[in-house]
Image 1 (spheres, rainbow, N blue to C red):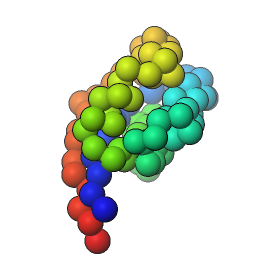
Image 2: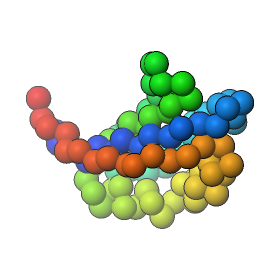
Image 3: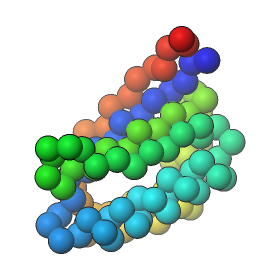
Length: 98
């Protein structure tokens, strides 16, 4: 089964990790629960990358990701994260069937 993969990386400001993770987990849980086209949304902390957080998201296709961009929970995340972290470039990939 193929899919549309999103890697979104953030550099969290010192002392703000708990707040950032709470905001990120809220977005992730709503994405998986409320968006039929969102298959997976993991919030991970990178080893050896002090303050680096990576979102690993899998959607059915680009249209499902585009629908995610219009959700209220993503709007809340976008409004809240700039005080907590800097967003690094977002990367996209295609999940290849096994």
